[in-house]
Length: 242
Image 1 (cartoon, rainbow, N blue to C red):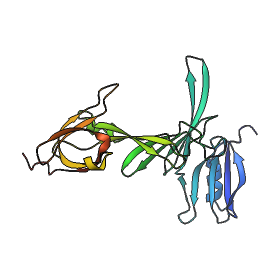
Image 2: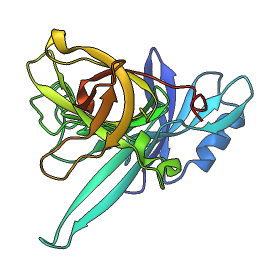
Image 3: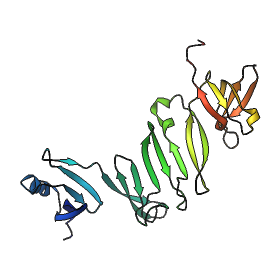
Image 4: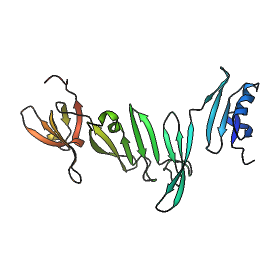
């Protein structure tokens, strides 16, 4: 039937077996609650290809699934065309599923060009802008989008990272060093490696200059250094010089 969107499933031999189908899940949950044989059960939304609720046999209760899929219709006002996308949300992260788009390592129709995850205490957006690349073409950290930075925005540095397949991806990260911190400068020329104290931070100038820091070494000599060459930041005590 056209309205048979939902399914009651039981796990059997490692696979989920459909027991009943219907246009809503309430009666399916009642069916299990009222005396179905013990086992693993779930209700499933076949339209969104996502579990709705999971049966806990120990507590004999239904709980919402940790996997949620949201389907959204997108309209292009310029070309008057439309695209329906899905956001598949799990505890691991959120993936964008769009018709005709994917990534190199997934089967056709099952890939994602955009992945959002919470890693190392920060939100990250991984983008596969090239389906021929196994690794993300862009890896964007959202630390700089914190509301705490609204009035004190950090300087960002773009780092190019080589991948095993011979390509590169770009990581956009906030530079968290501040005036007074000591830094180790990893210049491409080993003879020019040095250590010093940040005395000034110079934001990037649109179009040509990258973000820079002015570093003063122990002799008092100052040098402007591109932030991408800062290998390590050693935070100052903050109030030591105040």
